[in-house]
Image 1 (tube, rainbow, N blue to C red):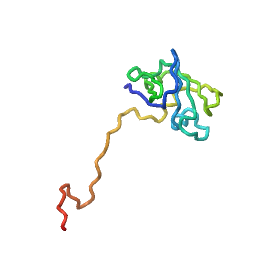
Image 2: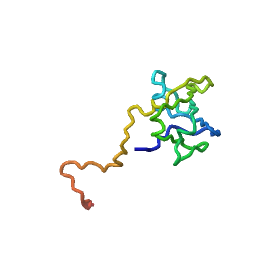
Image 3: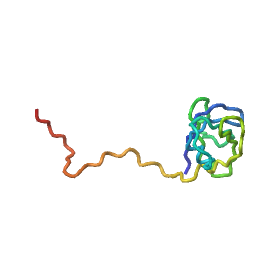
Image 4: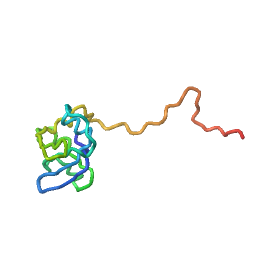
Length: 124
């Protein structure tokens, strides 16, 4: 099953690489031992080959990566503090605890005992 995963806002697009401002949850997956950072502080440089073909990277838009492309060993460079100090990360970490099944969608409100589905006119 293939689907795209949004990971943050695209900062720069080059011929063969992309730079994205990561959402904090993605930083936590790639670097779990590091304390929480504000979303957009950490930058990730990755190959365009892992980006979605249905939603190609565009500056200042959400960057989507293809889940199937992450199944293989895909390395990227993470600038955790946004200061230019890069470390190598394996993008497969983004798949940890990721449910491959689509969500059920919005659910209706649960009815309480004795509540009917018909609205009764109010007394005034």
